[in-house]
Image (cartoon, rainbow, N blue to C red; front, side, top):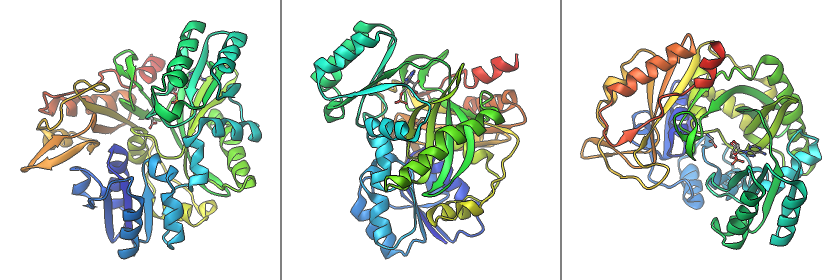
Length: 425
Ligand code: AMP
Ligand code: GLY
């Protein structure tokens, strides 16, 4: 089978690394890919947002399956265009991807499906939004309706902070048109996790849960990022909690999306807050998490290719998945300055030595090859992924690999999986 993966991050490297192991695979392309992906796939110089060019490439090369990594091309209709062209695709339609493209739509679907989640209001008027905040009081959460690169969320501990967020998002339009509409919702207290399920429009197959580290600094301090590290399993998600998440947050959504004529096919990523009264939905994303995907792929024993193909063909009910019992953990290495301004094109050495540590795979997120050297091209640059019998072993291996790198321009958090370690005492 000939497969095209769309995207260029650590998530896409993890997907390509896993697909490369499939005995069914004959050809693997990645558009546009990166220097690490180039070791396992043929990189094609088409950006992930170039829908017309991606469809033309898939048709011209008779791709048997296209796997779409990031949300932007899905929201822009890449999956629809591929299906119209007769190409099998793993990823939701634009109508279904609105779950991530519009937080208001997502909340309306969750309400219709009876999913446990924060109460909310949708607003297009500044005065009405402020009245709602004054009536409800703090803590309260203010979000832009549209995509704001993960930054359009203010968890306000005071009423003044929430009112100021309304002014900056809707008044000053600091996130542009994403702030034309706001969602204001209940603050949920608890332990957060990322849960994933594969969907084919009719049914859903649970993957496993992971925990991410969104803040840039040790001890969960500093600004939010795309994710500085992750691990799986997530101890907070016991088998009973996983079953409850499937029954209350995943399957009712799949049924409701089919009922409203927007069947959901692709991976569904539910951000969950495990509260004192059970798991509650924070949000849906229409793609794998990054860096959560890296640890999911490290733990998946089954061949990924027939699974994604079954997702694309509506046959997930036939699929059974096997997982490794080990813990997988990823430490993200970012360019100094991230998530603010950072230098590009710094040279990264020691990659082979790092990859030589037992149980470690070095996944690339933002790299390119220049004059025979690997250079950093993005904010998040590498994902040092390790497997181990325990959290402590996986973590020790990952940081041993980090210490073998020669990259003065990079940094990482040193406390990935602190929650899981604290639980074990
Ligand atoms: P989002 O972009 O919706 O994932 O929000 C970013 C982060 O804000 C989430 O990962 C949570 O840590 C936090 N957050 C979002 N919504 C809520 C909520 N209703 N209550 C508490 N924290 C929240
Ligand atoms: N790591 C969180 C995300 O991919 O949105």
